[in-house]
Length: 102
Image (cartoon, rainbow, N blue to C red; front, top):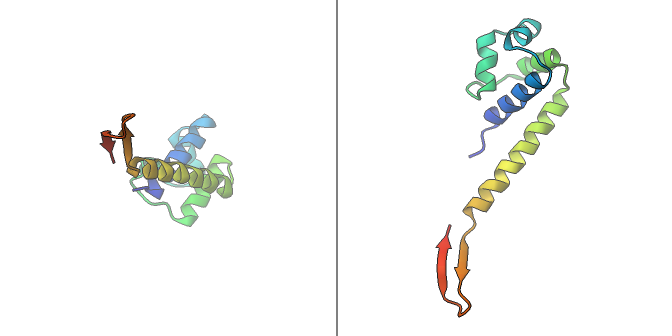
């Protein structure tokens, strides 16, 4: 199962680290507790739209860019889940099934 909050947290953490910011710096700028931001980054808490807007502002990144990155990550995970669920059958040259996995 793909969890939006986990992928959102990963994207936000990546954005923060890419900018060389600490949780404390983002917390002060966004006016959100450090612990709460940490829980969001770890996918343990959902971010409201207002909170997400504050975090994006503190990270100097557009909400559209964050959501696009999350959407791309969701697409990758969904495709991986589909591939993992696809049965694979290996046949010998004679047509006998030698291995099968789902």
